[in-house]
Image 1 (tube, rainbow, N blue to C red):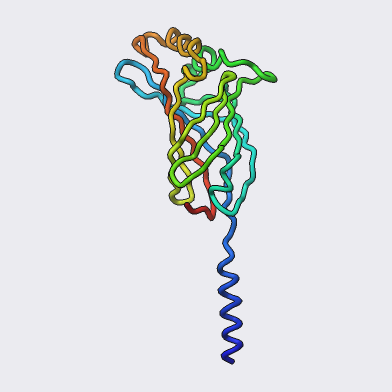
Image 2: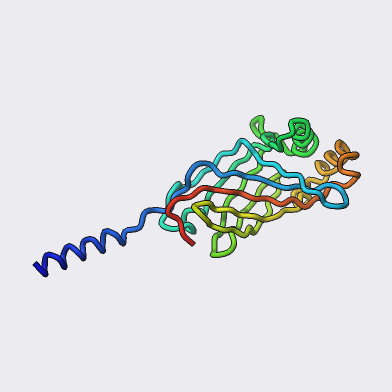
Length: 190
């Protein structure tokens, strides 16, 4: 009887120690905040159309995220203001080169550690490596970072949106943009 209980205990222990894979659930939400006026008033938005490539599950959050790729349709900008969206598409993102009828922003996660996700971001034919701090709470991964659109040679787009929105921006559109993404996950831990 003791031997039977010991074998059963070992079996249950070995079964319970098998961890479920860390998994992505659904598509990420990619958002941004740009700034206007000398008071640096934030205007937020997100992208509605994006495509991801990479594994949906891994042994750890680190292995799952590394090499994840995203392609964003720059014309899918959504600020909950159609007039503003049209101006951003036309005057800012309209300067991006068109590839196969689309204007795209792409990114690839190149490194993940306990505090930073590093992304190579490609826009307007330029690449910038962007560190993003992140948190994992209640099965939601949230990462935040910032870019300067001038690092992507988007001075013409910045000038275009500033001119189109001159009165609303009080003559000042900042080149600094905060970027973020949110991804639902399952069975993931830091």
